[in-house]
Length: 293
Image (cartoon, rainbow, N blue to C red; front, side, top):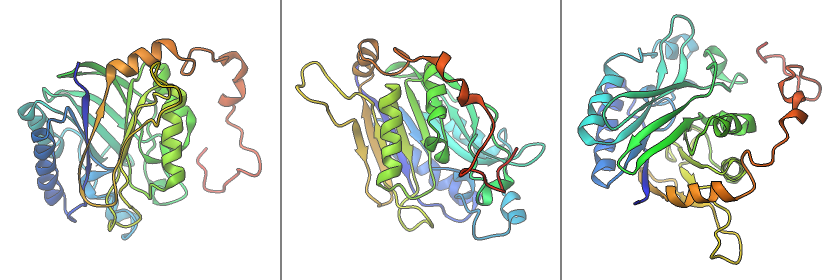
């Protein structure tokens, strides 16, 4: 089996929905021409995550219907290119909008619609509706079926998010992002991949976009191989800050063999000892006045 090729579309927004649509289509075409099986956008591509420079009422008006022309265009494109596309948007709902990613398979079918669970309530995202669950879908690719889940940006900082996706069967987690990816943020992604024995691919905006610096990345979580005397670097790719389409190659056969024999993931957990994890109480020093109930 050849490697699964994941294109990280580390591109800068244009300032308009129409411009982002056109630029996103071009980036997907480039990814497909380079052999990608999946293309991943940065967080909230429909409006370029432009939520800090304007009043909340203004940017919330950017919300678009998940069943509208923007997503439909990428659905048709996915089928045309024979490539899955994870497109991101500020999603209109019956109430507050959501920060969402929709995974379209290579036939243009919707396989996943995930809304960010851990919204950044300490900033402008307090005006968004958080997602209600984590989802895993089986994605048909030219490399065969792969089980894919999604997190968005701040979700990566909560170990439970990736853990739940692993328990639901995820082999690959796609992570749209819009914040500085510095050494500690990258370490969180590396850790989530290693402790759950799965791959994590993250797409960020390039340097020059406010509060972003590129460094899109992919980790495969495979720490040891029988033929190697020491542990290996799980990083498949770390981009620089420049705008571009970056391709990571994931060896699914290697990952699956590793998951069958090694010790992490769900092999030796003790869930009956973790009851405190579902206690909603928040004690000092972690109490915050803006935390949602």
